Image 1 (cartoon, rainbow, N blue to C red):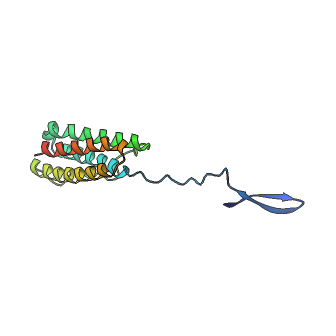
Image 2: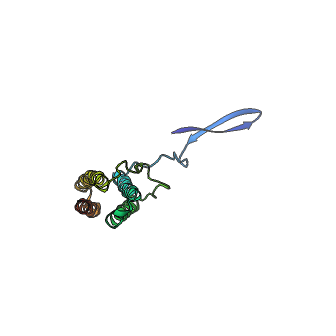
Length: 150
């Protein structure tokens, strides 16, 4: 690839230098890792559980361990991917739930966990062997979360 370089003044004439960009970095971002959506989903599930806790603190005994597990999954997935977690609130984090009753909050969380379990199971089935154990563990955890939310 040729790239225009610096302008050089030689003998009163201005000449543009061009050459190979062997040492130039294109600064292209790396291709997205297939686990990035699952990491983002884990962070969003943690945030959704924390929002439900804020809406109804009486659910703390049930929801805190689940929120913590989702955050741990997000952190581990980011570690495996080799990219730091985004700073601040996850982009996909939902606002505080509109449901005011514990049953409504739990129903919303169950629906999110069901979708999350399905996504983790699909990711596990498609993953290379070195990632399958982690993804299988996440899918199993999400299945147990469904039971805990009943």
